[in-house]
Length: 306
Image (cartoon, rainbow, N blue to C red):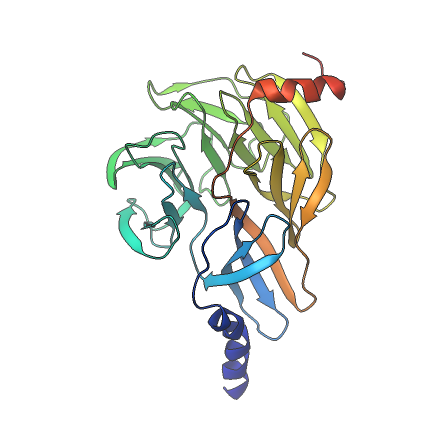
């Protein structure tokens, strides 16, 4: 019992030292990860704040929920256990509301990044049901076509047309597209690939991660850029920087910032010798997504056919 108390004290000490959250600065990165300490048997979930260089600024809290997403007004949404979404203000100082889904476990979620007048959330449950929540009220529920159930790992994002959900469960192959405005299913993009994550681009298209690589597609599903980024595969989380020329990825025990056009590593966190911290989701306040047009030139330079 004494060892357990000591272990918990050691785990919680860094958090207590940083009890007061610091204001976010331009380029800061919020990362939810699973953390395992050498002196403690259990694996915990922890939220960390890094600066634009990948330096740890603050340990914010344990069990914050994952993923954490941000809307255009700056509010944050954290997917908690029990099917609850916690809504927080733009500095995460106060909880300003809650929303729920009709099942005990959500897997992942995304938010409409462009609508300042409504908090539109799309939450995927373990059942494969997609819940649409508008201003904290459930509007409709639909089964996502082709997704394997029960869903254990998945990635979804709302594309720039504000109607198409891009998604993958990491096992059924390719990136699937479903139009939530007319409930229409599109052809699977790259069905022979196994993608782990998907992130929408501005003005159409998306980027998807497979092992240590990133593939960028335009709004027609055409591959416009591909590159190998890390041997620490698979990539567990992706988010764009405040500068759309850069992307953050979480893999292994670190987060890394790369220049998209040539896969040059420009910043990274440092793995800790007595701690195993594995990134699960990345949120960049003020994230700016690149357009397919801005990526086409990169693809030409790397020999991708158009």
